[in-house]
Amino acid sequence: MPETTRDRIIRAAVRQTTSSGWAAVTMARLADEAGVSRQTVYNEVGSKPALAETMILEELARFLAVVEQAFDAEPTELTRAIERAVSDVLTYARANTLLHAVVSATHGADTELLPLLTTNAGSLLDTAKAVVLARVAPYAPGLDTDHLEPAADMVVRVVLSHVMQPSASPEKTGADIAWLAGRVLEG
Image (cartoon, rainbow, N blue to C red; front, side, top):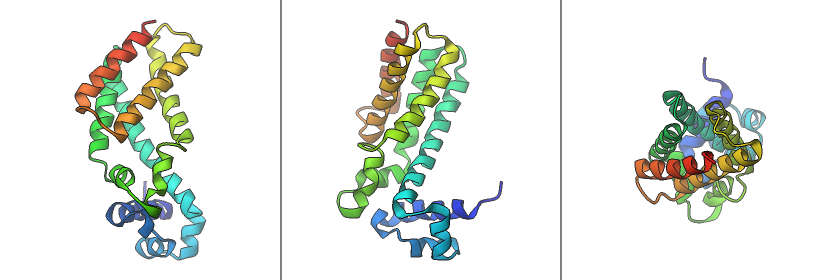
């Protein structure tokens, strides 16, 4: 599929954010780098806050693709699938330059992206939880929906916490979270 104008603009925004910080991203700079007019930038991505949310949600899609691949690789054992998904996500997060730019921002406009991963992370959490629920359901973990949903929410929130501030290796964290999730999912 050929790259769209919108894709070029978002790619330019990510590149500018990772190299110069979010504060340096302007619609004029994006237009120049993407080879379009400033009005085209606004037409394609809207305001700067809308662009920020789009960048974060598109990055989330890449993280969720890692989750999908991990579950596909472990089709018969739920705990192993969770362990692989967590480990792979945390490994991906370690090398993710956009995530590092967002998390390491310390002042001013550069910190505007951080709430999209923390205090204003509602759409991110809802999307991630929906993917996890859809991937866990085929394993028939034996929990009713009223208990499965908070279990998935717990896993997503704990993993996001470790994405933001790792406490151990991705493999160790994956094993630990899978162990806990396994105990919950077994009822």
